[in-house]
Picture 1 (cartoon, helix red, strand yellow):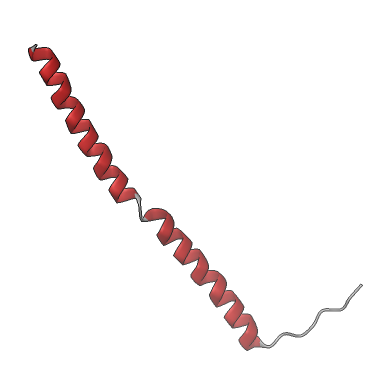
Picture 2: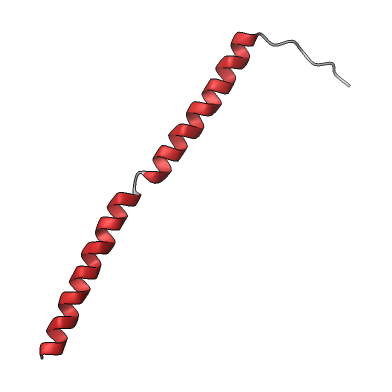
Length: 58
């Protein structure tokens, strides 16, 4: 079995910093499209109400 290698604390800090930043970026990117999708769903629901209202009037 291979013995562990001593890694510089600066390299460890950089590694964990990159990991944390990538997780934060991924979370932000994952949540970004949601407001647009909510707006599109709201517009589609309003359009459906209008279509239903038109069908009822006919």
